[in-house]
Image 1: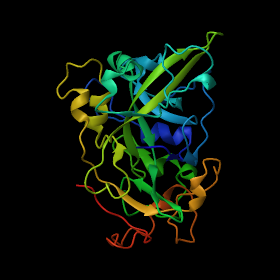
Image 2: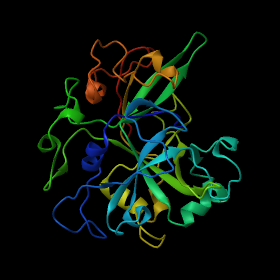
Image 3: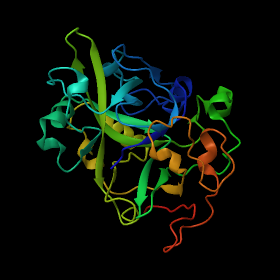
Length: 306
């Protein structure tokens, strides 16, 4: 399951982090920044370490889905929690829980299968996500994220760095590695004919390294080729989009403040629980050196998923 994420990059930095090589197969030499396209019917995106369902997520789509040339990559803020096109009434009247969709079952449910067949696939781009370890006394949150280059540390505020520090046309994004999750989106029109874009994150059974925290985990896209494959038009390409749903990826994790238990605490960070540093985006790269002891879950930790 994935019911809380962190997205701390501003729009301009997301454009760099989602840069790509144009062409059907990324065949051109130079990287190009993704385009940011705001939607009138969606609440404004606000960077935060504590984003919950019904909040707004930055979502990567093909250009044509954002009224741009097909080969472009477009970032569109979307409501987290898919509102199907056939929904009647106000969004607040919807009773369905649609912030996640089970990858084994979504093709059997019109809410999710219809947008998938319409090629309305997307990539949810984030710093990482949270899960909770429950005990009799409390719920302890953990932050899960993709391991990055060791040169980034907690003193870095990526949003304040110059573009040259994190991106160039030859290498693309050189900043901290983000976590990419496979998603599906839909469009819904209100009675006033205002269009709302909304999305869901696909989940799958957890592999052996994550079963200790939850039996479900997101469907991760671990490489530019997988991102390209998930966003590609049609279902004829090889491998097809559904072939990308595999239980393999590499993540690290650590404990974070219980203040994250409330989705209302938007100012809380995902710094390791026992760290005194609370400095921006790169706080997640602190204290990664110790592996999690099998019998002591309170220790800030990291582990590779293989």
